[in-house]
Length: 446
Image (cartoon, rainbow, N blue to C red):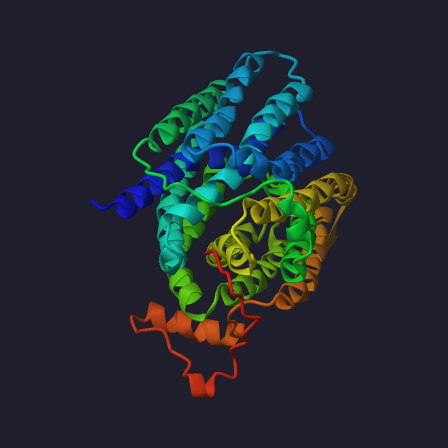
């Protein structure tokens, strides 16, 4: 096996095993544990801000990264913060469970985890060739989605089948074990000596890059909007509708299966027609999904849950892929500081969104009403407003200049071509009216 293939396999295996931790901290499993620790809407909004809040500290990550030749060891160190969840185990068996204990443990784990993303991106930029990046990340995300599907279904069965707190104990222990395996999976990774710099002095260079700052500011507002409501979708299902976690997992399985298919599709489209093209298309899809939650009541939740799963699986696959590749494309030179600024502004936006969203969600959840026999919860109105705000942010991403871009209409036609087994429809140079070529760069590092 070649060194490149070995590196890609190692990074993929690390992502697959890390998916268990992602399920614990970013799905309705997390919300279920939070409710077990008596978190209300305010507390839930606060704790949901932690992953984004600590991303702000990534601005200092490049200064740390440049001091280490073995970035995989640095990644293992930061990922070890997941083991703080062991501290939560004794509190599971207390009759009076203090929400502050849950907040403290999660905060400690996120302090470490927030730096890991920047290190991982630096490793990918050095070990995966530019011409393979879109295809590889799409393939990697396919396997990660499949692992996420299995992990979420396993955890949902455990949560619904075992009594509290044994169910949560099992979930945490499994997550800690797979986290250990994910760190060991990096052992075969072979790193090349990097000449890239990432000192704090690069910060001013990045801040002067107008195009990249357009992207970062748009990412700031996007996260502010999304995180203002994100924690309360699962909260609505568990607290208001009292849906079993297993039922919710069925929808996640649908979304994960679709993501597995579309990560490969989006990867091919991304390499062919531009990463921004995939981003805008994905944003359009996921901006629609919150409005669907107007149907998420006792009568129509099955239809709403299914439709949301389909669109989310397709749309978020595009968005998650593009939020890795677009920053790589728009960065002028080789510096982890680009990742740091992008993540820091996104984290700041997400933090503000989570903090503001908690009180707003609490107010909306204080009332409900009926229109005939149709029951509407206040939170559902909040979700519709969320959809409107997501669409309002999209024009900011359109202003970002990239190497190439085609409209979502062209993207959709090529998606259908790929799904039908045909090749993507190439746009000839002489008839490339849909492609916008951004400013040329003499030094491109991705």
